[in-house]
Image (cartoon, rainbow, N blue to C red; front, top):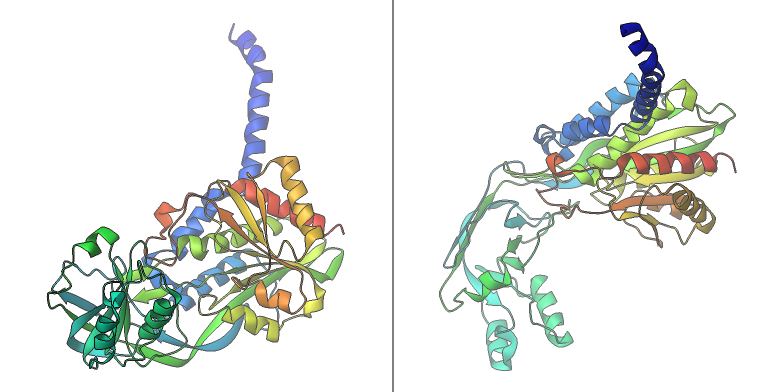
Length: 444
């Protein structure tokens, strides 16, 4: 009876085993679990936001280099690193802000940000002057304010309800500190966003997260004070790097498909505010490393050479990719197409392709592939934009796309872009679309 039962189930078991092996191959080819592991490492607080405090960028670059070595990728010249320098302003120590006179419990990164170009400030307490629609409601109030001595005062600007061009121009000039105040703070009602500065400014600025309802409860007639103190270090020639490797093509070794992504992020602001950058752009870096693993398998050997470029200092102004285009490791004219990946974390609503209007033939190819296989909800067209590392390549005549996902992730350039919140929705499908597109490029 057991023998009969075995022969009855054997065909079914074979089908289950075949399906399991097929699923295993798919997962191995495009492994979202592997990508999550990469993001967990790169977006760990132990990498200090992959910026310029505590060598976070170098830690990330060494991690990527190790992954390329594991896959036995070729390198150009003497190694995977292409070094370059940039000027950068950093905040390596404590950041302390206290506010007296209105309800504001200052928490670095959560409800206030230093201006990224701020000069060093020792502990200093200054009175607050408010600039909002009330101040500008009469010429008398405005003229009195413009004639006041603001040398040891903080100006707090709230642009809400300031609509006239004349008043907006005045407020913009006030934010630029033409009145020589000690510092200028700006009220942000919904969200804070930081960036990296290559310059050091002459006066401090702050962004304060205060909702409209909370702002309306502040009594501006009461005297308020801001006390600020922090460490700042301007580094004129900070040495960082791109990380680059390649797989040699079987039929066209001198022609290249390039996959790129930036691995850097904003670093940290003081000891407490770390900008881990899971979606921006540990997610794109993870997909690139997954593509490295995919194309390193003998059965996926490409006919064109494939270069993998992990750019540094994107957040400082596309510095790494610009440096590469000015110092290419092989002729730029040999690049068949560059595919730059940034913000890969959530594709519920599909993807956007920057430069779609510049390279219409290739855009139609990727769109038709998606229409045929239903990978993602939509492939949206966008024109030329200087918003990621594709830009200086396309400016040099290299056919290039920048692809980013559209979905549930709203955290961007803030402390909330963390690995635990990265869903990688439609990751496998997007991986399939990108590799299908790269295959089509190698046929034409």
